[in-house]
Each structure stands twice: as C-alpha cells, then as structure tokens.
Length: 379
Image 1 (cartoon, rainbow, N blue to C red):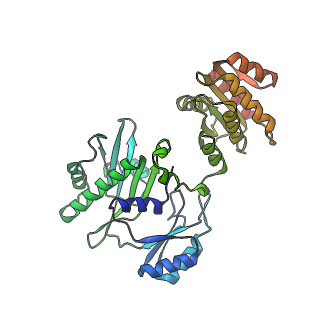
Image 2: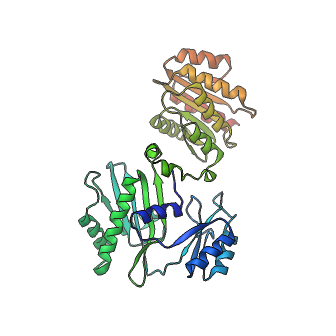
Image 3: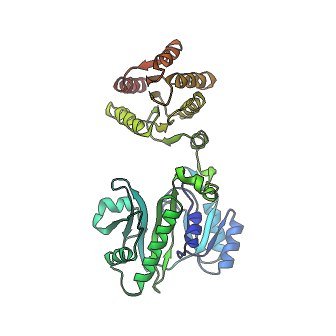
C-alpha cells in the first residue's frame, strides 16, 4: 500500500523529521488560503501515487497566494501517467543548497533492511544506480539491533558531510529507521533530503510503502488508502484478497502461489509470449475466489488468451474448475481462448468438469504455456 507524499510527511513529522509546513488542498481557492497562511513562496505539488510529477508539470513554485491559486488550477484535474490529480500539497518552498537521497528498503538477498544514501538527490535512484553506482552507499541493518548512531555517522562521512551537518543527518537517519520499523514499511524514502544555504536539513519529498500483510496491526494506516488511485481491477483484487499486478502483455495468468506464478510467467516469456498480469489466488481458494480472479482477467481488453496453472495441494482442482465455469457463464463479454492445467487434489474431477464445457486442458506446465502462447498469437 502506497501513501501519498502528504501522508508520508505527516508520519515523518510524528517522528521528528523536519518537513516543510503545508497542507492539502482540493480546490484552487483552498490552495490560495493555505498559501496566504504560510506567508511565503510555496510549492504546489500534485498528489498522485506515481513518480515523474515534476517532469509532467505537476509541481509548480508560487511566489504568493494568487500564484498558488493559479498553480493549483493548472494542476488539479490534470492526468499524470493515467492518474487524475484530485488534490495538491501546498507547502513552504525550500531554498536548496544541496540535494541528497536517503531511503530504506528490504534487501531480500541478505534478508535485512538496507539504508541507501547518495549525495545526489532529486533523481531516480534506480537510474543513478545504473549510471553512477559509485555515488550510492548502502548499509545493511541488523533488524534486532537497529540502526546505530555510529553507522549513521559513517554514512554521513561517506557522503562528505562534516561539522554541524553530522548530528542532524544522524537524527534524520535514526528517525527514518523508526518510521520504517514502527509502521511495517517496505520502503521509507526522502528524496530529496535538502541542505539549505543556512545549513538546515529538510525532507522536501517523502514516500512510504506499507506491507499489506501487516496492515491488520495498523488500522489507522489502512484507512489512509486512496481507493481513487486504484484501478477497478486493483480494487476488485483487493476486495477478493487476490495478489494482482497489471503488466503489458496479452496472456492473462491465474496461478495459486507466488513462486509458481513467477515460474509460469517465465515460461510464457520463454516461449515468446507476454504475460498480461501477475495474479496469485493463494492457497485453498474456493470457487467464488477463482470466479472473481477470472472476472478481473476478463476485464482486461489486452488479454488475447488465458493460462491457468493450479497445483492442488490445499486448493482443490474441482473447486477451481467450478469457479472458472461460473465466471464464464456469468460474463457478458467474449471469453478469450483458455488453457487450464490442473494437478493435485481432485484433478480428475476438475478436468472432467472442464472437458464437459469444452475448455482446453494441459497435463504439464510446459504444454500449457506453449498452447497459451500459440493461442494468443493466432488471435
């Protein structure tokens, strides 16, 4: 679950991280009022859950309240990467002496959180890692001990900081660590972390991504979800407790288990196809959940063929078959060619149900992937 910049900064402020004063506005007149109260040049920033807002014209600087109103009028309603801007953050504009990057993510290779810092902020860290890997410093953090003061100081030295900048950098690093841990985040990022000409450090932009699996511990954070930023398919998947990610291919995939789903997508790619989605129905899925998953796939106009790969351990293959047939019968849209591979509990019953409905089946994943790719290419 991603949080908006203004939501992330409110959490930052609770942990003592320095953020600009500001507030959220949904109309140009509200933006004018906020800018008037702040009484200084302000930044008017689109609040959408995608990057690249500045390049798209979603961040404007206003010298006074009238300019802030006009900036909000330009930004509210604009589309950035397919998302409509419905609100803006109006906050004090910071004078920039230097921009840095600071973030914490999960390093799955080392099974530890990693703090990443760079003296070059305000850029995409992935691009910087490709072009200037020497400009990035990483620190693996022991989750039991946490981020120690000396580790934060060493990172400051790596960035070339000295004198009066060491203590505030260390304080911010420790605060970001507490944000990451206390809120069960998978990402906590400040980009850029600005040093003003007067030597102050300010978190000018912030981003937090929360672990969906831990939201039951954070009901107040769960309520921050912006459902308007979700597509209809994402909303349906969340409500049905499905793991769904839209991709740019044309073969819809439904699999039970994240690892098996990745292997299925890899084989589709191996045989020259392109997965249209990642969709994991999980273990023990009943017919209604399978039907919901298929409806999500059928709602994607890019899908030209469907590949369903079910390993029936906890999940019963006949339940999957019933769910598929239910969704097919209920849909009012044309159903693309479908290949189903069922292996495991009650697989014979499941295959018989599908065969009676003239659904294509396969006995192996290799066969299923090849058939799905061929069907997509023939459409």
